Image 1 (cartoon, rainbow, N blue to C red):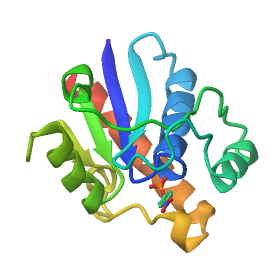
Image 2: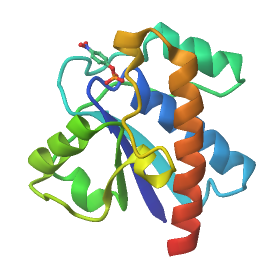
Image 3: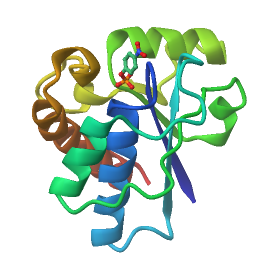
Image 4: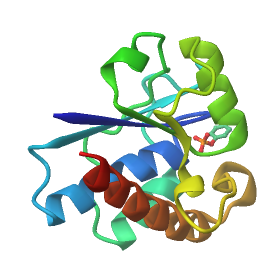
Length: 152
Ligand code: 4NP
């Protein structure tokens, strides 16, 4: 089993979107029994909360299930449990290094570094543009799946 964790600041906008989008890709590729997916926050602000209504809206628009998405905080133990720990932006990846105590480990990756964009996933909590974030998250998730299949 390969375990994938998406991480953002609040775990209510970008990382639960990525979790749901990636889970949907796995289902479509018949890989749900080989790869697991979860998401977490670097902050403690939204522990136990459902995703932001903008994330729920975009998932609904694309007919992607939002079942089981609940805010939680990243822990040090997550480093051992997960094979790929994917930050949405540069600040998230720095915070992942701090929380896990593993600076610059190859399993910790900024999502869009897997694509030609090499940039942060914009935070729709501030931009309000969940559509833009969805397109980039989808592109990143497709690139991540290719990477995982190439490496395993
Ligand atoms: P996320 O966005 O990291 O994509 O979940 C945010 C969610 C909440 C806050 C900031 C960003 N907040 O300040 O509560």
